[in-house]
Image 1 (cartoon, one colour):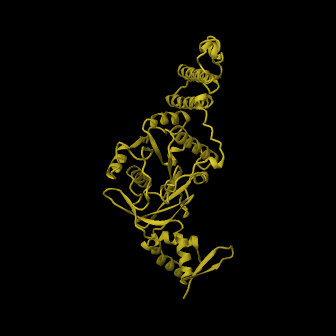
Image 2 (cartoon, rainbow, N blue to C red; image 1 turned 90 degrees about the vertical axis):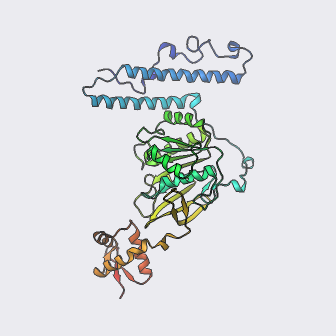
Image 3 (tube, one colour; image 1 turned 60 degrees about the vertical axis):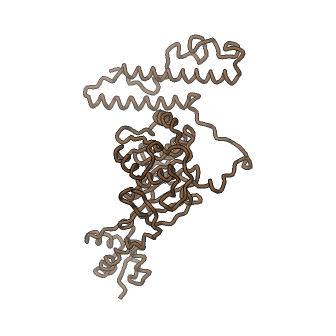
Length: 422
């Protein structure tokens, strides 16, 4: 059986490639110095040339690694095993290339500027927000949505406002984008995305779509992110939307804060360092708990400057936002089924009667079983076919106790037990 090409295989180059960049026989003259290259070249130009030679040297090593992997496939008995081996070998090569790119002069991370506070420019008051009260300028935004609460629809509405300069949700003024908006679509089919965006009146020549559903994750590795950045750069992208995190995140464990934090840093480096964009928006699915936090590691919600939360209240969708200089209380949204354009209704979701509708069912359950616990109340209502979200029963019980309809005692193990007040 031949040996599998591993990430260490490229570390033993041929005789020519073993020579340092700039030495005789490897990349040209004996040394890239001003004397050998001509006295007209400055020291900076000489350094740049040597850096390019070093990058080319590393690239040749990677190409040799790829060629060796193609010529020495693992000898396996079944086609399935061959496919698995190919995937393993490709993953090794991706990791090797990612390391090479980081080590090459052209792949080094940009250095953050160091300066005194007094030298920082003050943003004009009207430029503090990209979307008033919702999204600060040059910020990271996380959109956390309950299942089928309109996550992608809100993203497209946001893109529509940025591109057309119309108020977001017909309520929040927007600093209009002068460039384009890139939408990295990992969920919808291209046809559905086009239909939804066109119906909203989004200009087709300013929304750049990356339709990767079923075609591989363009944000998975350093190599793929660099390729994506190269493609997007020509479109003068001003804002990037990634929909959703659960598909875009390539790590082994979305609950691992270290993995999530590292990937978010890589995405931000691509967006801001490579593309120079102003706004980065990522969507995420909410968990099943009543607090509607994003599924996965806590690092995901630690990352953004602003968090938009989308929920369901009966037949209505709700919107709220929190963050740095951001605070929008939960408000219901209206939906135009013809255009898919959303707007705030300025109604509190509790006024729509969604959660109070379970109050009579809770009272009936408690009357039939005095001294019943919270979990038992929830189980009894589900047995009766009552529809409600996790956490609705807790809020309803607090409301009924405060109203004097129910009273609560503490059980032997500290649990709350509910009784009717007659």
